[in-house]
Image 1 (cartoon, one colour):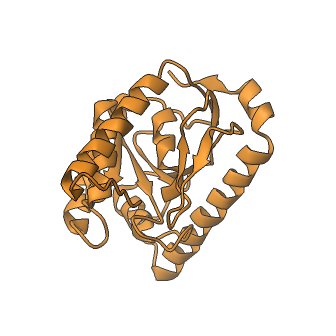
Image 2: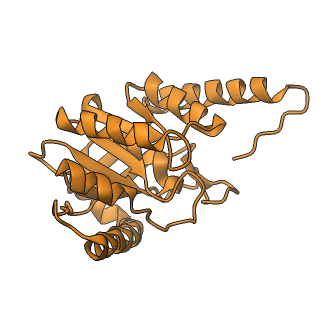
Image 3: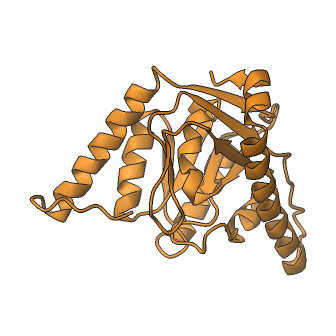
Length: 228
């Protein structure tokens, strides 16, 4: 995501954009209606897996008081973290390259307390829609399941930005739908082959879910439950 406003230096540009994102989401909460399909119940913590391009979907996850999001320590991450925290979503900062070990330990502590953690599994820089194995390894260590999910709106206000991941932002959307997949558990004795198999399963499930929620949006929206 590149921001260019000629009369402002880079630091002020990022602060301005972060403020605009926070304002946009606070305004949106009065105008949007997100329906949730197949939300997992009675789980003592889980790892939500989503594409980097669909990270705005965390806004529709129920039980926001239990939700934490893994966000990179990049400047773009600062904007996203500020917006998330202003909406009551807690954050864990780090990525594979920066603060990864500390972030993983923090995620494990969060999960032990029965909370949920959302991870953009092809971020922060791609490759696009290729799941990294980190989420599988955390699921193995924590014992909590991975829950893949996809988010979609047919609205023309569901804009796609020209970024490496084709980032989607629900600028003028009212009707949205979040579709959760079935929980995926990782055995505590899983070897490298098993971890790779599950990594591929998460990837395939995310592709399938995105196709499903896009194709059957109106049926899902009609039968879904409102986000609390």
